[in-house]
Image (cartoon, rainbow, N blue to C red; front, side, top):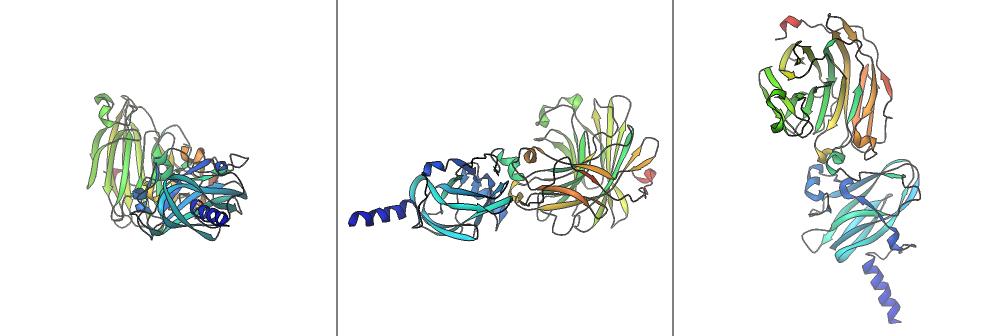
Length: 425
């Protein structure tokens, strides 16, 4: 009778718990769910210390809860496990229950955890937490792994592009120009309290050659950012030929100017300005062709506390003869660690002015999103109409998805901006 007892103990050690073993071959857990879909939810900024392209490493703190997200298209049951190594006890929480798992393997192995039961369409999650450890870390986890459903499109999650996928989807409001000679764009932004999440860029005035809006850069710093792309296509500003560089014409008080790269290259300006959630700010941009194959771009910021327009910067773009084209607004997150936090921006009172001085109120927009959204790496994006304006939302693994291409409209207000253009500079 010793052999059955030894076998029972062996199963407890190799399967890590004394719960029932899977009723299928463990090799059927054959589809990885990368830890790129994981965040330390009690301290998201520690995520980059623990979660890498290669998996979960350096997991030292018992208080850290590592949450892994995935999306299901309908109700389903998913057998899942982890590919892990270590000598510790950890907890795995899912479906309102918790399994305590003892890891006793020095090399990576596939460990069956249980069957995840998704009771509805939308985002699901699994939590890991450390209990005890004999080494400096709880475990190294290469990935989650699951049994592929017959419908291979049933589960959606980040499979590649670690950096942009963890930043989350960018959302856009796409507008149309009412005439072909638009020289001015005007709009307003107000961010509700609590929605001003670190890493957010609420972009008010976007156009074919640049963008302008406000950012949350850190716990202590916020910026107004205005940038113009060079006509030379590169991510390295040092490679731009002199005759295709963006030229700074002037800038406002306290504004820093320079070059930018990585997502196209060109001229950039920013002003450190600790704007407040719950306050509405104005954004004004002028696009003026000089008639010599150059175009000047100038942006101003309205601060209601001073009741004045403030110059941010003016740039000259070579090899360009244009009015405002492809107008849009967007919301993006530029810090991957905060990609698990939802944020929402309010975009209001859009107007455009033509070369003859005629104002046009813009009350319609089309909702759009970037490649991260379009390839279903992330589905936590939405936009719509609210409070006589538009809103954009992203990140946070929410389920209020808006279909890309949805047409939106806001209430017509009928009062054009009251701006004395002679006093702007």
